[in-house]
Image (cartoon, rainbow, N blue to C red; front, side, top):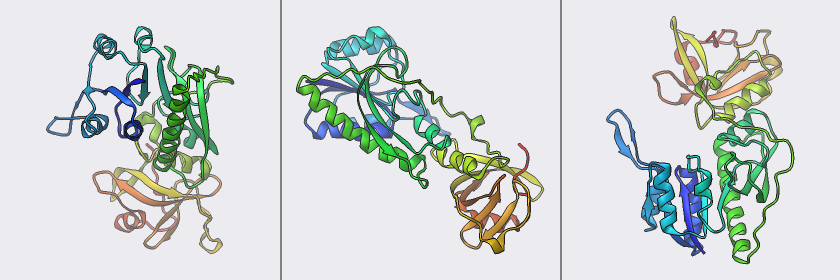
Length: 318
């Protein structure tokens, strides 16, 4: 079985490495073109390209639908596997491989179709998610399902830890699917249930509102740790700055430290650890932050440097 792999970011590299390790015949790898990054606008290649070069697999970076169409036609694959490729594939391209295009999506389809399923399940406070292998059709994430694996979401999970768990589950699922395909078992089950959607996270989605329950604030923080980070504005030394929250947790404030304050105020400060910020029902414990123009720092160090104390209002209006 001849395979063409399509992928771009780091999360797709583990899938490619597993295919290579399992001895599948790789006709080629397709990734997005190199992009200019940084102040010097130096070209940087995508992680999948780096991985393909390391594995000595032919790598291609077509920049148009026509180029993709011609390339896949010339490679004559039996199966294409797309993992976070980052480009919409048109109907005529999807028809080229004999078996079609197989994709691993990081949700239990038809729930959370779209670009940000991992972030959205956390923001919405879901307690389970999973990975789904499905056959790509022209409509986004709507094709028939091959198989799926359910993955529990722990309260302490954030987007980074959940991506790792789902990536490993997805690699295992893909291996299972390919074994079945080699046996001639081509499974195509219709998606059942009402679809929900997970649109791309924009910067405007990252602002925190402490006039919400603590769980709502915490869920947004942990859902956005991979970016754009959850943030709020704070008045420091008479200047309004943006503070990104990197790490937080839901912890009960000890009764002797509770004070009667409103949302967006500091409840208490834990020396060397962080601080509690009040929400409508309780507080969220902030552990690590990145103030505007600064490096990552312990939240308690930020509080000390900004000379905040318990009872002070730390979050201002946008």
